[in-house]
Image (cartoon, rainbow over all chains, first blue to last red; front, side):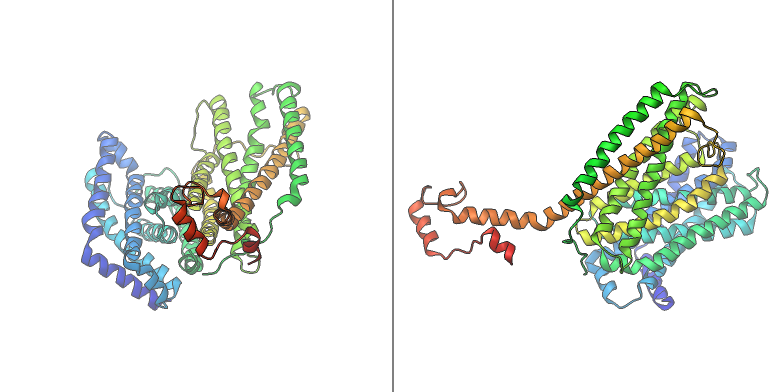
Length: 225
Length: 288
């Protein structure tokens, strides 16, 4: 399973390196989302600094949707998904490989977005361990849920509209918990310092549910739908 | 690709009496709830006339969760190979649709109650937020079902989504509870309920009435799925058989079909007579 996961992740990242769709299209889009948040809040510096964690995670979710769609669009062309099904690769390995590839792409987008939040919203980074741990586990959760639902909609005529409808409510706990954990890490929260780690625990539960659910059901999804 | 047993019989006509009894019971108990709730039950000491919305809102919210619970359990039964049966998929969609409608009614009645009690149409209360997320997820589930034509693929995808959504709801429950809480706690299902007399009786009656209504609608929706399955399986065959038998009968040929009495009947009629007929009667098709 792990070997198959590495193969699939390497394949997806190789396609991204050659096509640079995420870098050339998704990253500018995510930065535009941050700018639009600035317009929506009327350049209120204190309000933007307060809301920065939530705006950051909303931008990540907005960027995650096209990343997931792109990950399955490359499988839809030329019957690639059928070839993958017949390749004998472990479905759980395919799932984990796709999750790993999307997670790595989202890390790059997030690194650029963090720069955007610091420059545009005047946020001061703090609470390194909680900030980093939350970012890693939330990104894996977004990617895990995205791949699980992306596999469902890959062959459908209405996949472009169906995926956001399926995924947005599912990612609500990630936006909520990751925002609260970041607020705690950045010292913006009025709750106790341990509150941030409590939210982190919830994110671990969410990510665990989607990674376990994806590993268990991905084979059924790609073979029977 | 494996296909589920779509041809297995549903409860269909055998449950007509049950459905009829449930329907009449639901109508009678709903009418009784309206009578008790609007005319017999006194105004509340604290909430005044506003208490009357509580004869609707808690029961509807409970039925919303019952509908989604049914969808989750039926999806689980469908996914497990030992219990896999088309029946579970029909129950899952019936539960989800009924749950979605009651979820919307819960949001609307809760919003009206919140405006009168808290002064706002919406507040970020955990239960409100969770119910809104649940409603959005149910819309996604139903949209997914409508997007897939193949019934087996539809059952697989929607069952997996139903299970993932149920797990998400558990995480959501903790997330929204930790975040903020305004909603009133349990008033009814505890050893010493805070409602008494006619109020308690009317609330309990409302649960019975909406429970019967839910069971009635779920059974009807299930029956509709049975009919849709039958239409998918037999509709084309019956239509083809009818068309072939129509073509085979010389006097009944339509305007698009050449016949002895139509224009050019000499040529086409001769051709029709010379060719052996390949049409089959409905009984022949049914016997295959």
